[in-house]
Length: 305
Image (cartoon, rainbow, N blue to C red; front, side):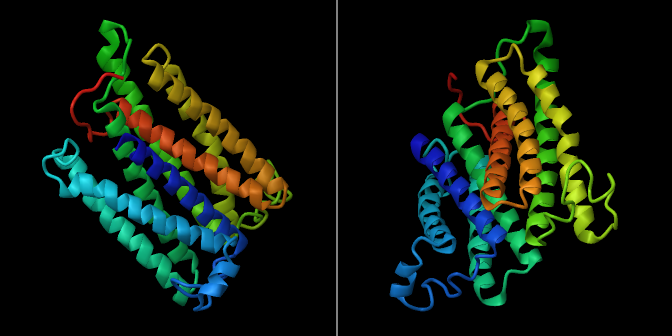
């Protein structure tokens, strides 16, 4: 169960990155039918290396594996995971979200890839990804622990890490949503240089796209201080939290640099995919910190780290 849960997190991570590439390259109609490609197996095989076909294969594989994991949580009352009512509710929510995401993905094949539908599709995927990470963390650790704090600072130290982790999740959630809107409305070059947005620091003309691009850029810079404080607060705690917090700060810096490179490079596909992959990794690390620090209450029986 431990290996399967993390394997599923990795698989869903690849599914989200492949979806990012598809939306970035406008490649969603490589296979305009579902489940086949141009209604034939031969066409599907001919498009086997296309982003859309890979995305579909990953989606179906993830659906099968998710079903196995969720059966352990929702369907087996006597299992350790199934005996946790909060985790069971999470599993039920994942089932609904995954069904919505899968159905919306199919619907977009026939109704078109509107920015609103594509963004909702991304939000569903992000929520499923988050739920799978929480499950994997719970299977791995079993209970929240922030270790090695001085005895007189246990409560304050742990609560500070919890607050920073939650605020960090909120900040990254806003950034992911802004990034999805920028990507799906094709607003990435509305601020074509850095640090200026056109000829001035502010957009030359405040349109919907230029405002999105500007907000996405500087919100990422603004929340950088939050990750620095989290890394400082986690020093001296258990190695798991301290290392994860340090990694979150490093990734937040990397994310900003990749964003600059992506814009200055004219939205190179590889740079955009890497930019998205770092963002999803940062989100996953913050969720792991939140679970480990006890900020999210989905934990089961105690287990030593």
